[in-house]
Image 1 (cartoon, rainbow, N blue to C red):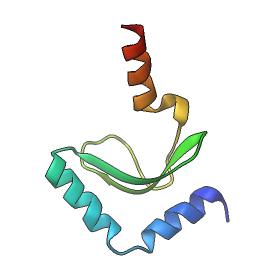
Image 2: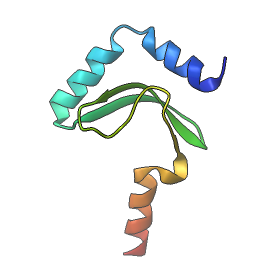
Image 3: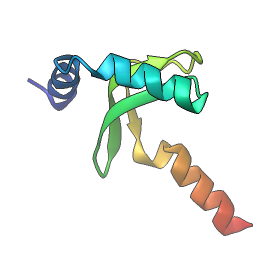
Image 4: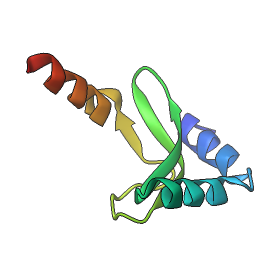
Length: 79
């Protein structure tokens, strides 16, 4: 079983994850929340609440260099 499949299946077995993600979206006013496995190289979305149309889904991977926080740090460093 690959890392992605294993991570998403483990999150899917935790019954409270969908409720937790929904509450996070409602509480913060954001249309997106996720439970992710984060490594040095990538983020793996394991559980997702995507009401914003961001296009996230369980198993989606994002390279760390594409991480919005990395971009923000770069912008702040350059200004």
